[in-house]
Image (cartoon, rainbow, N blue to C red; front, side, top):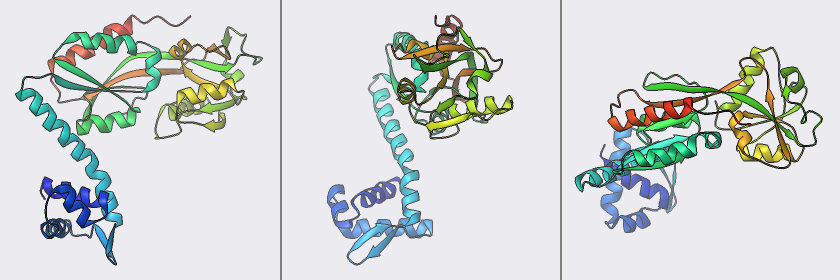
Length: 299
């Protein structure tokens, strides 16, 4: 299998026309059709159904299209990085992060990262912890900052700190004036859970914490974004459990109260490829460890 065959296949899959794909690729149609046929023969499956004068992807074709997306993206990144190295341009360093970390040390951390080496470009990509592990193994990112402690033999992990969990409530809620809440105060409350997908995620981490204490929370709504969850709290739909740093997201219609329950914490975890011996990566990890240890809890 050749990379050009994959590139040809993807263009045909996008155009769903050999004629248009050949025009886009600046080649004649017969050699394009021949390369797709050779690819199908090597795979041992049909990638396209011929329907009248048109074509459509088979189930195998749709799967192959999805799975080759990361491959072609990674190839593009490798080509660009190779060109930058050859021209002695800046190196690219990919950082994946979960959005909730932006309310803690991440903004200052990102700023400090940019000062570590002026020959490195920092690329920032919002993604869940699960997505970070996949992106690390395919080379799309070099470091992940996540919220759940997944295990993978190819990934090195470092828990920077365990962040306490706070309760976000409507400002007029009967519990909003309390200084501290116990778990028994929260269990009966309607709970807004995030993210709804992809899973496993911070949502599953919270559900496990409840179950470990012998409770099943009253989940009334699942949403994808933290901001959406806070907005629904403000609307009175329910309460949300958030990492304590999210209290820095000030809103007049939302109150944050500390949750006093042993074990109810949310880890901030760094992840990187085990075989990555980059000196820049080591400096990045050291900086994160130092900055996280100096974090003060929000007032």
